[in-house]
Image 1 (tube, rainbow, N blue to C red):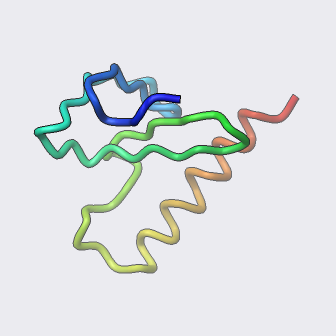
Image 2: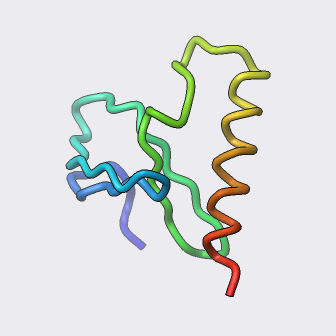
Image 3: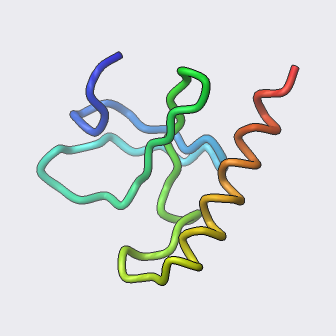
Length: 73
């Protein structure tokens, strides 16, 4: 698997927003890998980097649950 955020087109696994990554510009996108599969998630689904641990925990729980539900057969 290639290194993330090096110029590839990222498509949000939750809302299908697409954006080309640029290693020189902070985009606030996240990349999660579940069961060997890479998922990009746009900033719409995560708080800012200055958010509290509780806000991040809530966001990650929501995102991971959503991704796991999509992966179910």
